[in-house]
Image (spheres, rainbow, N blue to C red):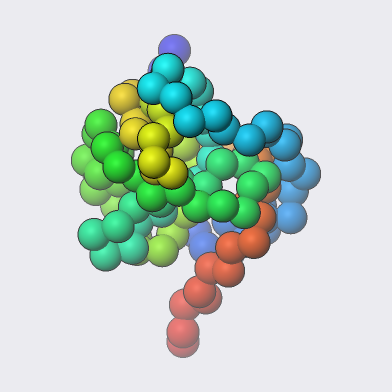
Length: 123
């Protein structure tokens, strides 16, 4: 399967925020690999993951190659990007073992971004 990525602007992400959510049950803390999909964001040296339709943001404890993909993608600080990853949660943080998708070639309509306020560019 070929993965494509592109940069989505803040206005586009804000438009996606109102899309219908596919609720995901609460995550059980375990070191068993699970598939996760949601929004990845970087702020300074911190990175977070917000599962689709949930308001909680999880810190990324181990990120496999998320940081490298974000750099290649030219991800700007505080700009969310849709990702699909495999990993596990431990101590309230997400440990990413594999990045399955970074970015999306088409609008993500079934992954709402709940409770996040994204700063608008000044100008």
